[in-house]
Length: 346
Image 1 (cartoon, one colour):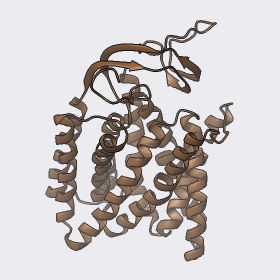
Image 2 (cartoon, rainbow, N blue to C red):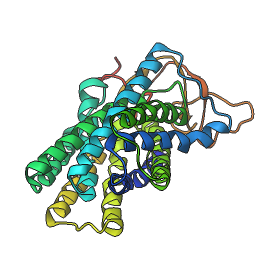
Image 3 (cartoon, rainbow, N blue to C red):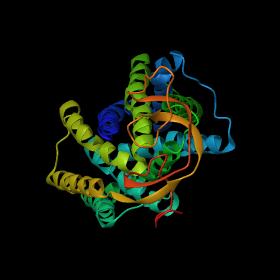
Image 4 (cartoon, one colour):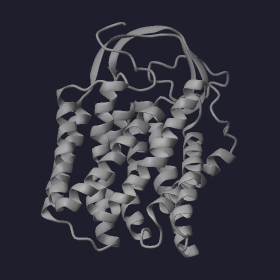
């Protein structure tokens, strides 16, 4: 079943949608490096209660799991948010919120090129529509618009790599992944920000940045990772692509930013791109090799056939489990169990 993961992805999108208008407001008191650091430290604080309830906070032990997490820290938690905030200084929160849908196109293309994902005709049309909408938005702002759009696009590429790396991370929980990303990247950016400019923001602005990070990044990232592990990075990003709609609404209500005809047209193209990518699904005969890992799962998806002694496995849960070899055909997404190459049983 995919409705649960899709609902989780939409909730993550609503929280992330508030990030652009909140960050635009906070940039009045903080530099991009300082704000990026505080937002991601706040993200670590936001998931701390889930970790305190008994889930492991251990850093991944395997070399592959460590590489995936450190890559996500460097690009997703370190470079990506700084590029976004630099672009946010040049453009309105409304435009930046809409530009963030380029993350969908970047995630889809990288998925095909590097991560054994697949896109059909509808998927490629959707990715192209997202890019066209970004160019439409940039053209409305002249040179500054293209500069801001380039910065946000570069941030989206960073987050596209992050999306795939975290979707493949099955050695630690989504909350633990988010904690390490926020703590390591946030501390680094805040230290760099304090070294390059005095930290003169009032305590209220610092507290607001931490709170925004806890909700817009911490809780949102943990939920999006959980959805991506169930749906695959590209499909989860489709649902997450609704975040700009929340961002545009908040920018208009909170910051009083007007919504132009160009932005409305771009929003329509972006909505079409989401619909096209969402239609792109496939089915074929494929084989699963024996595998042992830990991640959130249900027992009605055709892949988790192990039994629980107490019989309590109706709801989604996470634990270490073993998959026996299996071959079958069904409609599927590129989740943790479907990173195979296509064309039948490999």
